[in-house]
Amino acid sequence: MNTRRIREGKATISLSDGIFYNTEMSELRDISVLFIRAIGAKDKRVLDATAATGVRAIRYGLEAKANDITALDMNASAARLAKRNVRMNGLKFEVINTSLQEFANASRKKFDIIDFDPFGSPAPGINDLMRLSEDGTVLMITATDTAVLCGAHEAACVKVYGAKPLHNEMCKEAGIRMLIAYIARVAAGFNFGTQAILSISDKHYMRVFLRLQYGAKNAAASIKGTGLGAFCRQCYSFRFGTGPAPLISPECPKCKGRSEAFGPLWLGRMQDKTFIETMLKLGDAPLVRQALEEPDTMMLFSIPHMTEKLGFSSVSKYKVIEILRAEGYLATKTQFSKEGIKTDADIREVLRAVKKART
Image (cartoon, rainbow, N blue to C red; front, side):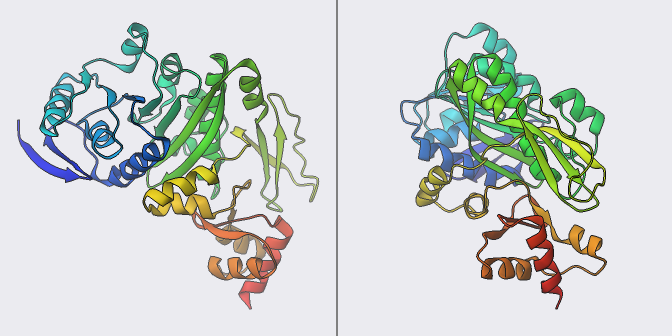
């Protein structure tokens, strides 16, 4: 088997043919290290549920001072490689050749921090994560099935997440809100409430950082914090109904057009700005800084979509942002769309700013 060594963060690891390692995800691993440094990983029970080369868990040990780590991988070759990499970096922690499901069935240990970065959808593993959690457990969960969450495969989204996606320029924000809502529904079945700390979307993945809070009231509050959305393609307005069974008329109250329903969605905050500020004091990360800067509002506005509706060529999103800020609104670019903005202005004010940006 061919092997080579690379350096990532403070870790030096061997790579082997057939053992998954994605160089492009190193930025996400940087963010995860920064996150658990801000949590404080020393003496915390940390689980890397999808170890592969072991690079994440090793970096948590070296850079976040985690000293109670367990790493899992169902691939025997990957588990052997991860064990070698752990030793090579002077660390001592358990690497187990097993699946998350088998481990959750057999283990009585609970964890303070769980990292779950599977190939594709995380949905099949969420039940198992809950069985390994307790009050205060922090989950770091990645979804790489963004085409499903963004509506390219609507039937798959309905099947996997029990949600109807929004297939347009706002799909990434809708998708990550559907992901959190799905996790919150599963968590509630285990009597956990869900608190979103950090939500990021980039390239082909979505990543959510959540804290579980035990108790029936917390679980019920989380479910009440989800709901359905309705989007009118005629006037570009959104409406939201809160709770497990909201009533939303298919007729848009603003223009009488027919609205498109989507969700269930997480309607609460996606970013804990105070915690994110703590992260950024420890080190910079552009995606995390963007999450801090943009308003945590429902939903983003796509500038090309709006100019197409208005019947003229696109305008600079930065000019629209400048106009809105001059009028006292919060307005920024957004991680969820290259040509979108986030603002606390309503649709009428954004449309007016888009028209003004044309001149």
